[in-house]
Length: 105
Image (cartoon, rainbow, N blue to C red; front, side, top):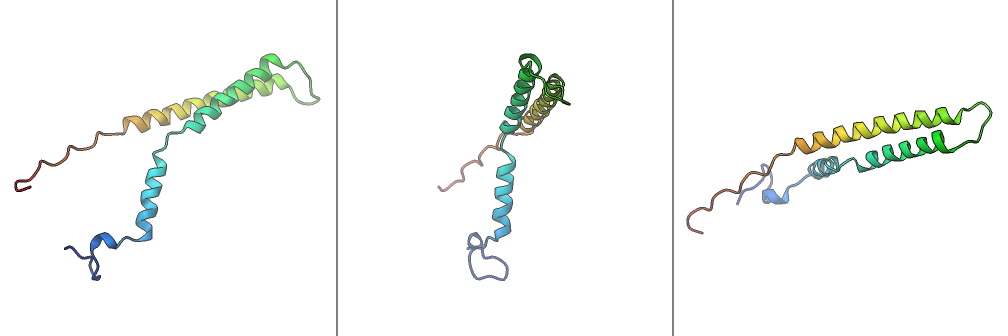
């Protein structure tokens, strides 16, 4: 049996809190940016509504300009989220094949 250096317990029993935290961080990083894609589309929709459908006026604020700004920001957020999504997918590699069975089993 393999024992950890300086310990009289098996290696599998010696895991530190930092190792668990790193695994959880890596697992959390792999999630797709779905909220960013949705938020970009939401901003585009709200901006289009303000630009083309709202005819009200507010003193000191041009609602149509605010709509155009929201559409531009939403389009930028959408494109950035798509770039991140495609980079995340292209960086994946298939898992290595399992080792061949050893004789005697």
